[in-house]
Image (cartoon, rainbow, N blue to C red; front, side, top):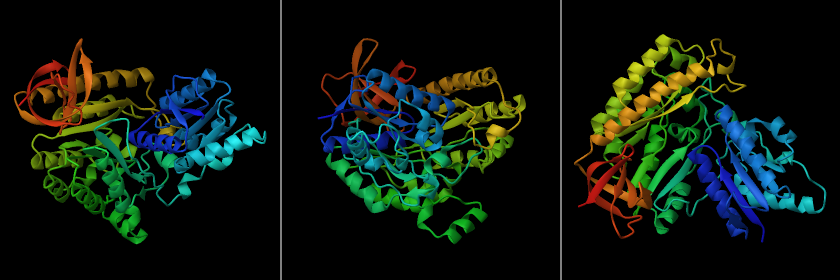
Length: 458
């Protein structure tokens, strides 16, 4: 029996795909071991969203080969898809597999093993890297369990048609490809039978779910009207998931701000399993920067979406992404972003300094800021995020809330049962019994630390 060690880099979609690849390998008789152990085969699911992600991907590839020079090192995913020349010249990589071939992981690895034994191939098999831009079919994969015991991430969509000026992902993931509702429901039904209570719908561009189910003329008309979302298709799927017995919570991954309309928010609010926790990707609070980013909405439209969500849900948790130091970002534009963020007061912000990606429009723009300038601006926003996050948590002290407990965790030397509310506030409970995967009504009583609220069971 050959041993396999797997390591994931990047987003929840990547994490989902790695879990599925691991299941395929286990079913085929491979022994799964820790990435820190010596293994016969190492599989690194790579990321390319930033230059740092590229570097980390290379580091993990080289670390695996160093750990066992005789092992087969397999690079999979986005970095492979966008850096073919580097992949082919890297002596640490034995096999490279691009996106949309991950479900063939066992077949491709065993084919390589057979060739290696015959001494016909000791180098990269280029046939594994597809031209992702030509892919039109969703690569169906199905998950039966995850590393988490209570929450399962469900991939319902792949690819992106947005082409933001700074982003390489459309080149790494291809165009929008959506998963059929019957396949999503079959996967969720299996996960319910395995004991999962919460699902998180995720994708590369979730708001585009279903666009590929319509004709090209329909999509062209929608674009002409300024509507690139497929909210009706997404809502239809969510309603079907809501009807699945056993699921008690549904979370949505990152949403395009333009998808949040009165109708969309109202429909979600009428489904009690929907968690009032929404991630709307902002990137900048300056309209001029958003235009250079090719984000296709204004700060005013974004604020309208937030206001709509807050009208239909009681103090929902709204999170976002912000890029600092985009090419040409002036002090005045950064000041606009600061004021906008202070106005919205997000529950949490993921703050990223701009990362120059070769092959994108933004990489050729004038006014590239220094790393020091980007770091200073990021630090300022991170401090704001700390303050707003703490303020949001404190607003819930004294309230009764349902908590789905996920694990035992030691905090400051004390063992707690830890879980999350529907709006994703982390909660710690003193309990002698293990309450993992139990949903319990609790009263939030005090801050345990800046990220955790202490609770008492009702």
